[in-house]
Length: 417
Image (tube, rainbow, N blue to C red; front, top):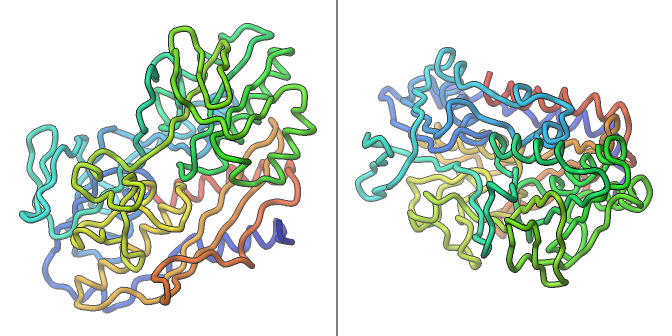
């Protein structure tokens, strides 16, 4: 951990949360290029907004299977009933009404990269000049796992409500068993954050109950200082933390998980599986990284290295950057800027910078934070971490807890308002 302060963290957020206004050259195009975006999370929604906001004369269509977006940001607080689901439900109305984005409640089922066409579940076929895939994550299957019995709640919405209800119904003195997937996965601090807020809930509501935290990684992958301290002090009698515990099989009915270090059971089983790119990304043949799970991209514009007219944003892409809502939004602005420059006959900006920041509740009234900045390195053609702008909060605090909601609201507004 470095000497980063809360004041520096807030200043950094203010400096990097909004991309510079698009240069006048981007508005030079006289035709209306067609951009189709699959996935309306923070990556897809931000891209749709900023293509219209900066470019104007762009035909933008956003396709998502849901009528609204349920934010994973703050969703762990819905699990513990600290906030309602409505607090993380984000509408596409402003994208359509204010910016002129065509929003379709539908799902992409096939892509013709050579014909530049997307087929939707409804049968509609959308031609495109540029296609952007931002479908988020999918899960690597686990034998015996039924998410309706052992919820993941790693895609916010009905799963969040299911886990919330299971936690509320859990008998006092029982175990809440949850797994941490092998890195990389969506929201690196998220599982440890969930363990903390559930442990806090159990201490207050169901004394004698425990969280069994089974981590497939060799140690805490994000905010090791703050989460490690919380596990060993505040929750030393509530959280049992195990490392190198890869999930092998799940008995969803009897709520038992078999791992590489043994079997564990409890009243609630929260299985967060290993993750991979969304199905439409995999089906299109874009997941060509060494693991076969993620889609490599050119980080100057997030174009696929397989099909340069298809861009991949957020959780599904393979790069050195973490998978988070804030990062997806940051990548979307780089992509929008590069795309508009391309439509105007120019090249992408050669030195993009992205950032990812998050707040993590530790108790019902305190939170920590984590920030990272990435800068393009022309030698490796990759985004490299800027060491001086990486760090976690010195300690959780009440001020951080209040700032967490301001940070979330700023991201919500930047993407959807």
